[in-house]
Length: 333
Image 1: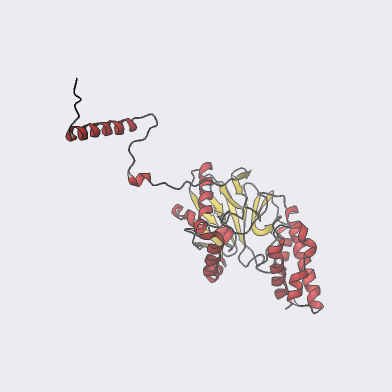
Image 2: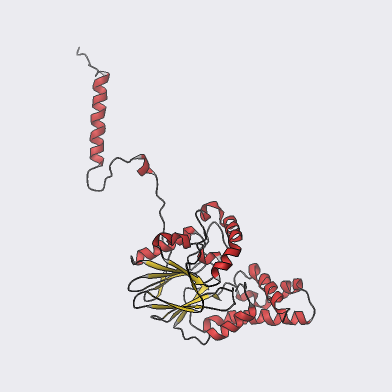
């Protein structure tokens, strides 16, 4: 009978070290295999998926936000966001309702171009348009807004952050913070992206008291922010009289196309604004009638504008608020 010799413990340890070394060498060989992974490298780096964008004109891209309220499921992706590419640089127009959406917008830009992002422009103060600003801080752009934007944000910062953290939840809202303008527009300003100029105009009180419009001279595209709502019912946070007056003036602006703050990525001008104009005129005339009849603001909020309900999404969420704001303004005429 032949005896079976068992290796000593020392021999076994040496054998295992050799096998382990050969395994590491095999994993490090070229051809797609990876080598040994350190604990630090093994930590998963979050993958940022780019937002979907539509090129509505050469070098002009728009992401369409959802017709929805803030919710964890959409991470604050409820407004239209845009970017314009010039010969030398990129300008971003609105950045979304959270850091996560801003990061996804930046990822979308990087799928199209590696040109520097030199400007981040906010059309107004509402969180769904500017809470993504922080995603662009490392690009060191100029953050541009209406000259009243910084003051408006300072007055509302605590409330905006608290409410939106509550609506989005801790995961979707993580890392979100307010980035205030580093450059303001008093009346009119022009930025040059390289053979492409953007004209920025500070508008009088309308949707808010800090609305900024942007016109791309190269393509004739006019970015209106929330001065234009399509399908999503308009939201009044400024002056109904001022908004109607501004619509009349903007209707005279020659534009090949417009980008609304909420709605499709692109629309014809001035046809696009007619439903919104009709809605605001209806609210205005009905509120004036109720004030004349001595009716209360509560009665007005419950009844005014109902004839417009079928034309708009999110009507129940915002119409009574619009009527209340219009009543408070118009009763002092």
